[in-house]
Image 1 (cartoon, rainbow, N blue to C red):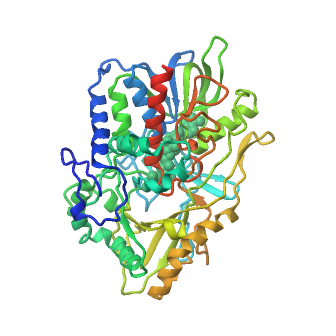
Image 2: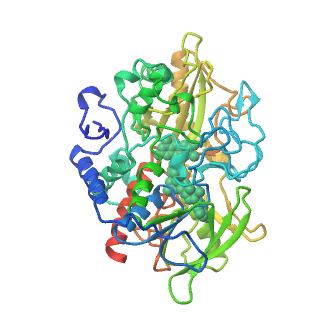
Length: 551
Ligand code: FAE
C-alpha cells in the first residue's frame, strides 16, 4: 500500500503498486495525520509580528538548538501552542544565491559552499578508477560537514534545515514488526496510528509514478538494480521521498530548471526537494512566533541564577570565527543539534560542570545505523545510464534473512560508469560512546572501523549472491585503491542521549526540569531503514506530551 500527497490527490494506489512497497501507515491514519497538520495551520498565529532577532541579554520562553527535523517539529508545535521560540542554528540560512546565481553547488562540482570549514573536499566516494577526486576549496561555512572522529567520518547537514538540506530525501517508515527493536519503550500503536502519519504529512512525502519510472532514462540505474536483485531472489521495494516527483517529471521533460536530474543533492538542491525550509520551518515561521538565528553556535547551557537556563551562543563568520558571544536566558531549552551535536554538547556540559546533574547515560548508545557502501561492476551490456536522478526511489530488502536494507543509489557522474552503487543499512550490535577529552578540550567518540565488519557481512548476503548470479565483481576503485567497502563513514548518526535512559520516555533530560532532547540522539543507534521519518515522528510524539504537560 502507499499514499500520495499531491494536493487533493490523497488516495491509496494499491492496484498500481507491488505489494512489497514499504509503508505500514493506514489510509485512515494517514488522513488523520494530514488533517492534524492542516488543522494546525488554521490556528491563530501572529503573522504580522515576527519576534525580534536574538540579542544578548534577551529572555526567551523556549530556545531550540538546531533547525533539523527534531528542532523544526519542536518549534512548530510550541509556536502553535502559543509559545515564542528562538531557534539557534550554527550553519547558514541558505537563502541567498552565490556567485553563480544559485544557492547550492552541484554534486559534480563542489566549491566554497560545499563543505563545513574544510580546505579540501571530503567526498563520500573519494576515488574514481582508483584516482583521488577530492580537491581544494576555500574554507567556508559550507553545507556538508564531514566530521572526523577516530574510526569514522560522520556526514551531517549544516544550515537552516539541518540534514534535510543535503540528504537523499528517502522517507521510509520502518516495518512495524521491526519497531520494538528500534524504540523499545515507545507504543507502536500510537506511532503507526498517529505520529508516523503526522510526520509523513508534515514532511510532504510522495511516491514516484512507476509508469514514468519504468521508461525514463534517469532511473535506468534503478531498473538495472531491480533486475539484478530479483534475479537473485531478493525483494525490491519502492520507497517514498520528499522530493517533489511531479517536479522531477517536468525536469526530465525539460520544461523546468533541472535539479535532481542534473545531479544536485549532496550540497543542496536548488529546486524540487521539500527540505524543512519548505515544510515544517515554513509553517513554523508563518505562526509569527518563531525566529531563526543562523550562524549562531550554542556553546554552553547552565542553570540561570533566577531560574531557567543561561545559554551562551557564538555568532560566527563564514570563516567559522566568533564575532561576538551572546548570553541569553531561556525558560526551556530543546537540544536538537543532531545526534552528534547534542551528544557533544551534553557530554561537554556534564563533564565541565555546567550541567553536572545529567545522568551517566549521556553520550552512550551511539550507532551508525549500520551504514556501509559498495559498488558493483556490471557487464558492458548492462549500462546504468549517463543521466541518473540523484534521488533514490528503491531498495533491496533482505532485513529478515540478512539484517540488511540496501538503498539502490545513483552515481550521478554525468558519464556511463557501468557501476551499480548501494548504501546498505544493516543490523549491527556495535555502539560507541562520547567522552570529554580535557587535554584537547574536545569530545571524542570511541568508534573503531573494525566495528563495521558485521555491516559488511550483512551487505555481502545480498551482493555476493548478486555477483555470483550475474558473473560480476565488486568495484574496488571508489573508496581508495583496491578497497571494496565504504566502511569509513555514516550518513545516519543516531543515539548519544537515549530515550528513557538519558531522558525520560518523552525526551525530558534527567537531572533538570526544562531541558529536553528532541532529535536523532534519542534513538539507540538503528532505525532499520533511513532515519528521518522516525526522528520526525518521535519528535511529534514527544512534543505533544511536553506541550500538554509542561506548558
Ligand atoms: P539534523 O538534521 O542533523 O539537525 C541538527 C542541526 O543542528 C544542524 O542544522 C546543525 O548545524 C545544528 N547544530 C549542531 N550543533 C549546533 C550548535 N552547537 N549550535 C547551533 N546549531 C547546531 O538533526 N535520512 C533519511 O531518512 N533519508 C535519506 O535519504 C537520508 N539521506 C542522507 C544523506 C546524507 C548525505 C546525509 C548526511 C544524511 C542523510 N540522512 C537521510 C540522514 C538525515 O538527514 C538525518 O538523520 C537527520 O537530518 C537527523 O535529524 P536531526 O533532527 O537529528
